[in-house]
Length: 104
Image (cartoon, rainbow, N blue to C red):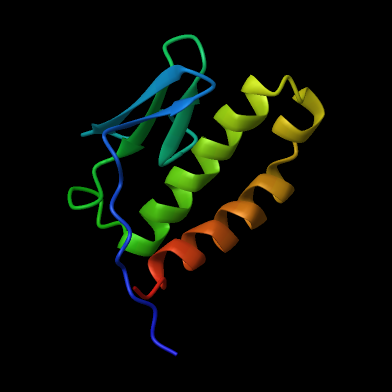
């Protein structure tokens, strides 16, 4: 099965009436070489520019869903789930593949 890359990264979305903006950044966010960040104070998701850093569409989609899940768990006040990186990364992979391969 070949993976389609039909998912588009949104500019913004809402969680519990809080607008979350998505920013594409031109530089790596820190020395740990992360490619995404959930900023709860500013209600933002930051993703690195996939073209500039040669990041595949599938990886950027998974990173978006990873950060989205952090925002969801933060809004639900689920600190334990929000700190479970294995759970979040696995769920992000499932969501990314589902959205990328949806047929209409």
